[in-house]
Image (cartoon, rainbow over all chains, first blue to last red; front, side, top):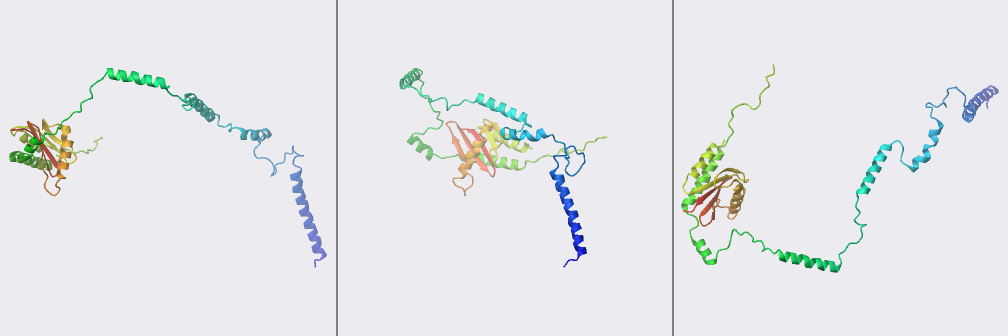
Length: 182
Length: 90
């Protein structure tokens, strides 16, 4: 059971708390009615942003691109227009076909011209031609390679191989030299 | 560096009836060519000798002989070097 002294103490605490809370509420609620107040409190704006800029951009940002990149947008538009003028839309040209009469006429003209300028078909160059069988048999039966020729080529290649194996770089002077900068 | 090789090629050329000589490495690079032998034919000659070696792989490299009525071309391989000798038919 609380005593009277404690009760009165509690009352005074509650009273001061109530006045503090009410004071805060007052400062929040009555901010608009005291705009000319020059007192710097927790509610003063750090950056003085004018009211109009905060209001107007919001409806326009949804509709178009942000105005802070106008050059990029104009460049893109320019490129788009250039491409559009240069594009040839083949699909939109429409079906093109040769009439049957025109086609047959052309066939006749071209074949007449080709016949007039008739060239013999190009003869394929033939280096190797088959020998008649008799000659073939005779050649294959004959001794293939003269021993002298065989020795010639064998010795030649052996000597060449040994000569190449002796291939080496002759060192005459140094490749890397120091710059003698005084 | 190639003085030795040049000497060998000269020696081959001095043989009677020889009109051309060519030496190439295993990749077809022409190392030496003289007389009627053309530099560009090195690759072809090496390829021919390579294919010829495949006929009997276990034997030593065969000699390839290309013949016309008047001339012959002898091709042979020794190790990595392929040599060709162009000769008039005796």
